[in-house]
Length: 74
Image: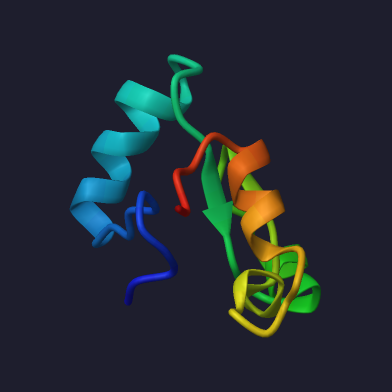
């Protein structure tokens, strides 16, 4: 799955490494793209809930949101 240029998606083992090395270290942000009801049943430590529709190309504010988080979308 690819959301946008500059936005990485990870498998389970890479996610664990990412959480330990990057999120805990404060150098990266983990987006949990589940819907709020799913997110509330069990969150990923350090994850920020942003429903996947928020990052869809039909959202006219998507690139602004991604830029604010430090992603390169151009």
